Length: 125
Image (tube, rainbow, N blue to C red; front, side, top):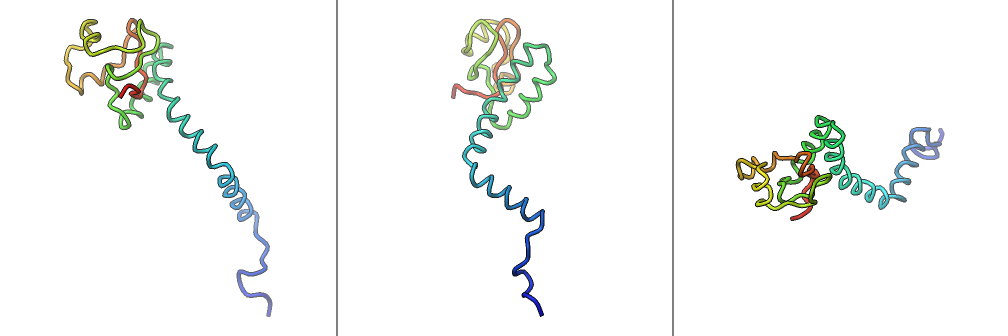
């Protein structure tokens, strides 16, 4: 009457492909995790680069994507392409870029040509 169902059956192409994918992930999980972490940390640096390149809409996509992961306060972030890499709240007030020092208003400031543009994640906490 033949072998019982599910035994001695040759795996089909989809099953073999699935097995190869699972084994590849199992063998390289640490490299995959490191790549994911590197990507998560490196992408916020694209925002100031895009701002400097004159593409503010594209840059704002990165600022928006990373907003739930960080408060993005300018006095707690690094800046690229400006006079300094970091600014205190007093520096920003003296430069006249913050008219309101509330947290909600401060986090909206992404930078300018003089001070540079903040990285989309806060690194100074």
